Length: 229
Ligand SMILES: [Mg+2]
Image (cartoon, rainbow, N blue to C red; front, top):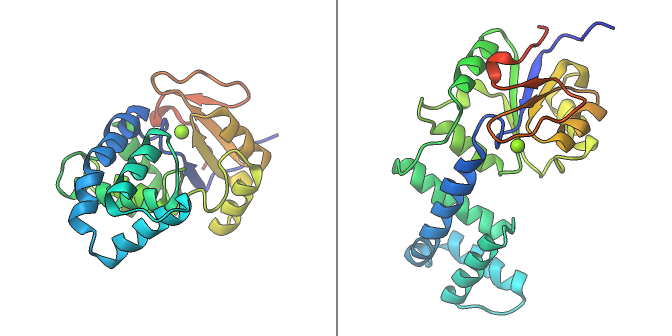
């Protein structure tokens, strides 16, 4: 059986384009560190008021601003992905990127190969558990500049969980291509299985610390990814 040609690439972020440590050791701590001050500084703005009200609603008790801050910080320690927290983290990260407190991390092979694929006419898409907003911030503020112009679309878990084939069917539909013509890149075996189940081609990225998973081609970096165009 010949391998179908690839006309689009769908990539994960953490552990694939970007080190796991950037998210765990830079983004999340920065969000936690700046959250109290950020909320206090903007607490009278309608958008922030609405988010704090959502915190109260989730906790089912009326919280003042300081109590809401404490709850938000607790959620961070519990790795809760609740809407008001995600929204606030996004705003704080945007501020951090803007102030150049940090850059969005991508491995050095990533921008070079993405550019090559883009020039070859491949559609490039992102699928990550981080919000689309956070994805655009990351790729918009890398050390080598703004990479968002290379991508044609972004998907997060609003489309569906990353370990379910239905999510990949939905993305293929949205992209307007057959799953077999889409190559999905990830470090996580269960995500690769789900994409493969949906009919996509797959490659596992083996960045530092990732264990090889059987049943999928492997690549240590984007240069090593083989595809038929
Ligand atoms: Mg990953």
